[in-house]
Image (cartoon, helix red, strand yellow):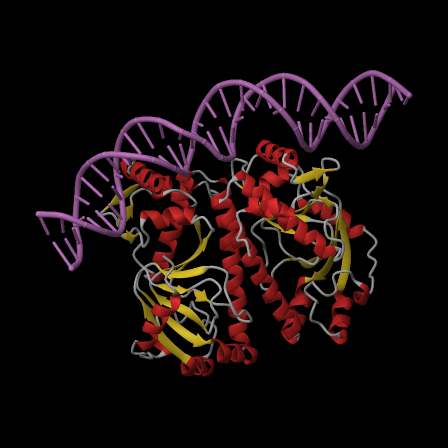
Length: 250
Length: 250
DNA sequence: CGACGCGTTGATATGGCTCAAGAGTGGTGG
DNA sequence: CCACCACTCTTGAGCCATATCAACGCGTCG
C-alpha cells in the first residue's frame, strides 16, 4: 500500500526542466520571492528548476530527507498526517504561491501529496539556505509566510475542535472561494471548483465522506450552492454561506 | 463578563519591575535568546522589563495593539479563540521559554490568558524589532520557534480532528509530562501537576469537562495515573499511557 | 460491456454532549 | 471554630450529531 515517494520523484526528475522568466511568473508577487528586487530575483532564477506531478502523486513522504524546497506554481497539494491504524487528517492545503519545506530543517513530519496536477518551482535546499543568509527580503518573507500558516492552522484548530459539520463545510467553501478568487483576481461570483474529492474534503475537515456529501446536498437543496457538476459550483447565496460558517460577522 | 485586558495590564505596569541578570535566567538557553552571545544578551537586557499576572488574568485581547512581545519566564498561559455564540477552543499553551507576539505584526488573532500565575520577560516591540534586524541569532531563533509552533499546531489538528476522547487525554498528559520534565530536567517518574482545570483541559482538547473528568477517572481506575489530589498526579504506567495516545510507537 | 472510482442515500449504532444532581474543597466572615 | 458559599469536580441518565455499514447510481476507461 505504501508507495515510496522516490519512485515518482525520480520520474519527475526526468521531466524536461524548462525555466521560465521569474518576472513573468504568475506567483511572482505572492510567493517567497514577493519582496525580491530584480537582482535578487536573478539569483533565485539561477538555482530554480521546475517540476511537475500528476494528481495523486506523492511528492514528499514523512521523514524523507528534504533536498529541495519549493513554491507551488500551479495546482493544489495537501499536507497529511496518518495514524498507525490508518486514520488520516489533512493539516494543510497548498495553493499556488504557497511554500514547501523549511529552512534549517532537514525533514518534515507529514506527507505532501499532489491533489491536482501540480507544478513546483524548486530550489535546492543548500544553495537556497545560503541565499537566505545574504537576502533579508527572502528571510522576512519566509517568516511572514510561516506566521500566516500558523494563523491558518489555529483557525483550523477552532474548526476541528468546535464547529459542526455544516459550519465546517461552509468555512471550507469560503476559504476555497477566497483562494481561488485570489488566483484569478477579477470576476467575483464566478464558477468555483472543488479540487478535492469528497473523501479528501472529509479528511481536511475531520469528518467522513458521507457527512460531507450530505451537507453539500443540503446546501444545494437550500439554494446556497448551485452545482454545475460534482466538482464545479457557484455560491448562490453568499450571506447564507457566511452565516452558516459560524465566523464573526465582521 | 468581558473584562478588558487593559485594566489588568495597567495594574501590572505598576508592579515593581525588577531586572534580573539574563545570564542567570532559568530560560536562558531555551527562549528566544537561546543563541545569543554575551554581547547580544546585554542588548536584550537593556530593553527588557518583567511583568507578572495572576492566574485568570487576561494578558492580551484579540485585536489589541501589541506594544510588547515577551517570553514566558514562569507559569502557563493559554491562547484561545472564541466564537460568537460562546464556544471556545484553546489553540495553544505557553510554557516557560515560549514566546508571545510576532515581529512585523501589530495584532494577534486570539486571546492570551494567564492560566497560572505568570511572569513575563517583556520587550517593547519597536526596539525589539530593530534589534532583530541587526541580530541574526534572534531572527533565526524566532523562525525556529515559529516552525516548532507550527509543527505543534499540526499535531494538535490531528488530535482534534481524529482522536478519541481517551487518546486526546493520553496525548495531553504525555505533552504535559514532556514540558514539565523539561523545566526540571532531572527526576523522571516524578509528580506532575495539571496546571489547567477540567474545563480548560476540555477546551484545549475539543471536549467537554464531563468527558475529561470521566476519562481521567477511567485512567485512574485502570492504574495508568495515580492522583495525589485533583491537580497533582503521577504516571503509574508509562507504556499504557503511550499506547492510549494513538501516537506512533517509535 | 464490465469494472472501477466516485458519489449519493438510507438504516442503524455510538461516542461524546447535554442536562441535572450532588459531593469535595477552600475561602470568608461571624 | 464552624457555617456558609462559591467553585470545581464527579457521576448518572438520556439524547443527538455524526460515524458506520450497506446498497446502489452514474461516468469513465479499458
